[in-house]
Length: 149
Picture 1 (cartoon, rainbow, N blue to C red):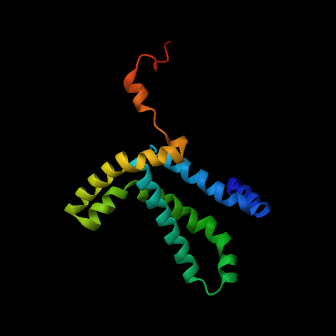
Picture 2 (picture 1 turned 90 degrees about the vertical axis):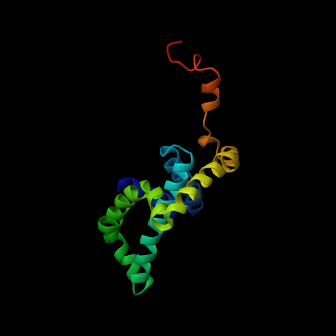
Picture 3 (picture 1 turned 120 degrees about the vertical axis):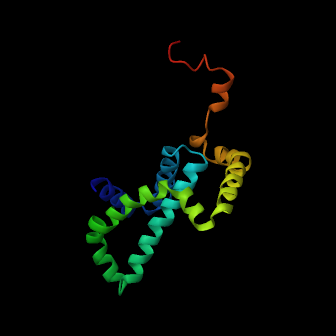
């Protein structure tokens, strides 16, 4: 919570920091899930779940003032719990695709994976070098990658 308060204070003092901070947080989330197709699916599922929680909270509020007043207390209780729960739900995103689409979902996941690997990954690695995988150099020369040398 102290970290969140520090980040809120930083954004309050310098609002233009919000977008770079959000970008960095999303990239870190993607990177911790492997930086590939699964990580992208996880990130999309997590953001979608969090946005749904926020929209639900705003829709239930009678006014912006009521939303702001209840946001602090709700942050401590419900939003933190929902964020924790959403982490686990987002891990299961391929199952949600299969649940919604059934058998064709398997084909969609397979085609999406191939599309990501051959079309989207080069764009991602060019625009987000921190997500670039170095598997090709490991395949070419695994001996030079060993820590013993």
